[in-house]
Length: 414
Ligand code: ZN
Ligand code: ZN
View 1 (cartoon, rainbow, N blue to C red):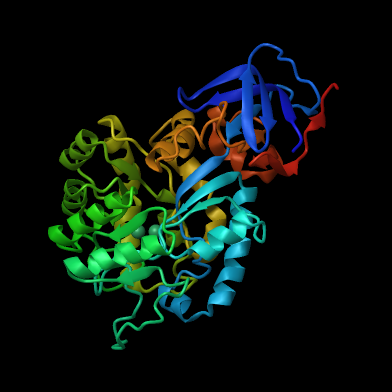
View 2: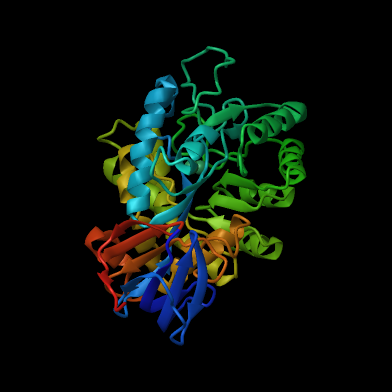
C-alpha cells in the first residue's frame, strides 16, 4: 500500500487536549507509521500539504443505533432485515462523511453489518456492536407496544430488533452468551426506564441486582464489558455497583451518584443531541404525549448532569443516540456540550476517552505511531468552537485506515 505523508499539520494531541503545530504524519498500510515535529526522511510517498490546518483523530461516537432508520422500535421490528441493512448502509456512510471514523452501536446492528464494512460492501466507520440490548420483559428494549399481547418469538434475532428480552439469572446469562456468540464486542443492558418506550417510568429500575451482576459476570468472562442505559440516581448506582463500565444518558444524576461513579471509574456517556432533536421533531414524527413529556423532563437536565459529573472527575464519553431521520443531527452532540465543557475537552471525549472506554487505547482516538490511520483535516479551529465541524465544507479530508474518503488537500512538494 502507498505511503502517505501529511506535512505541516496542527495536530490535536487527544491525550493532553492541545494543538501541536508543525507535525508531519507518515501513514503506511493503514496505520500511523510516524509522527514527527522535525522534517523526517520521507522517501517514496504521496505527499499532501495540510497548510497548518488542524488535524484531529477520527471522531468516535460511542452511542449510535445504525439500524434505527425509523425512531419507532415496533415499526422497526416489522421491517424486513434486508431493508434494514440497506438503510443502515446509508446511515453508516453519512456518519463517516461527518468525520466519525468509529462508532459503538448500542443495540440493533449485528455482525453482518460490521462484516459488510470490513469487507468493503458498505462504506462506514469502524463498527463495534452490542448485538441486541439485554432487556427485561416490559423493559426499555422490549419493542412490543402495550396493546400487543403476542409472545416473543424465535425470530426475534432480526437485525432491527434492538432488544433481547431475558428474565431471571439463567436467561440473562444465556442472552449475553448468545450475543457474544453472534459477534457482540460489548454488551448493552437496559437498567432503567427510557423515553422512546411509553410504558416504563423514567426513574424506575430494571433488572434485579442478581440479574445485572450475572450480565456483567458473563461479559467479563468473555473479556468484554457492559454499557448500561440508566437515568435515575438509583438505577445508575445499582448499575455501577454491579460493575458496568459506562452509564448511558444519566440525565437525572445527583452529586452523590456522580461521586460514586468517579470513585468506581465508571464512564458517563451523555447523549444531549437526541433530546434536542426529539423536542424539535418528535411531534411531527408521531411521538406520543407520554414520550414527549419524558423528553422534556430529561432534556434540560442533561447539561447540568454533565457539568456535575465533569466537576467531580467522572470520565465523560461522547455519544449521540439519535434515531431515524434525526441521525442527521450528529454534530449537535459536539456543539450542545459547549454549555458544559470546553471544545478541547469535548474533542478529548470524542477521541481519547471514548477509545479508553471501549478498550481501544492506542488503536483509535489518537494520532500516534501504531494507531489506525483514522483522521480528519479541518478548516478553521475547532478549539475555538465546534460549529466548524458541522459544515462539511470545513472537513477538507476524511481518512479511515489510511484511505481517503474525501480529500481536498493540495499535493505537497515532492
Ligand atoms: Zn438508552
Ligand atoms: Zn440508545
